[in-house]
Image (cartoon, rainbow, N blue to C red; front, top):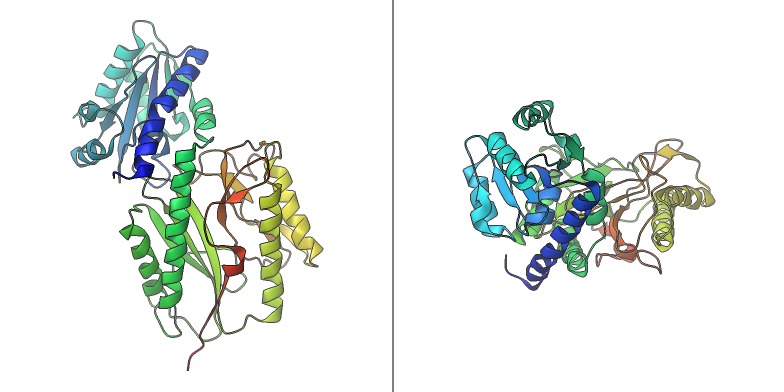
Length: 387
C-alpha cells in the first residue's frame, strides 16, 4: 500500500532496526530471532521490523547485529508472496523453505558467528515443539530472552504510527455510523455487524471483529446468526480492528431504540465520566494502577457500588492488540510520552453491571489525546423505534 502514511512508516524502519540492534549490543546478543504467527495478536513483532504479513502459521524474522535488513522466513509460499509485496526491506530476503526451523537456525548461526549469542523476541510465544526444535537446531547456543527490551522500544510510537492510529479511528468512526444505519428493529444483528465490518475491510483492515453486549453488560461477543434487534433493546457495539497499516484500535458506542431509561442513562454517564477522568490523567509518570483506581473512584462518586474489574482499565496497544503491559497484570507500569493505550474503564458494579466505553489514547504531558473522531457526545446513539 503506497500512501503518505505507508511511506512515513517505511521511513521509520531503519531507525527501529538500529534501536533494536543497540539493545542487542547492550545484551551481548549477536543475532535475533523474532517470532511471529499468523493470528490477530501474533504478527506485531515481525511487522515492527519488516511489515511482514501472514494469515496463519509460523513466520520468523532473523536480524544480525549490524545487518540493516532482516531475513523473513514463512512456512507458506502464499504468505511469503504476500510479505514480498508489502515488506519494508528487501523482498529477496523473504523465503518459504521446506525446513523452516532448520533454515532459520542456519541464518541465525551465520548472523551470530562462531560462539555468538542468539536472542529471541517473543520467546514466550514459542510452542513447546518450536522451542525444542530450535534448541536442537542451535545445539550449544544459549537463547537470550529479548522480548522485554524490544517491546519497550515498540511501545513508544512515532508520528507516523500515531497517524496510522488516527486513520483507523476515522475508519472505525465511519463503520459505527454504517452499523447505526443498518441496526433497525427486526433486522438481523449479524447483518448490521457485517455491514460495519465491510466498511472497515473496504479500507484495508484485515484482522478484526465486531461484537455486541445487550443491557448493562460490559462483555461484548459476536451475535448469534438468528438474533434480531428488538424494540426496547439497549446494546453496546464494539469494533476491534487493525488499521490498513496494522495498528489496532478498540472503539465502542451505546445504541438504544428510543430514549435511554433514566437509570441506564445515569450509569452510562458515569462510565463516560470515568473514561474522561482517566484520559485527562494519562500523563507521563502516572501508573496504570493509578488510572484503574481513578475510574473506580469516579464511578463510586456517582453513587454506584463498585464491585471489582471485568477487564483492564488500560493496556498498551500497537501492532498487536496488546504490545505490552495492562493495568491488571502490571499496575506498577509507569506511562511514558508517546505510548498509545487502549482505554476502557474496567470497573464493574457490585451487582455485575457495567458499560464498555473504549477508545485509543496517546500519552502526552498534557494528558491523553483520543485518536478517533468519535467524541463522547456521540457515544450514545438513539435509534428510531418500530413504526
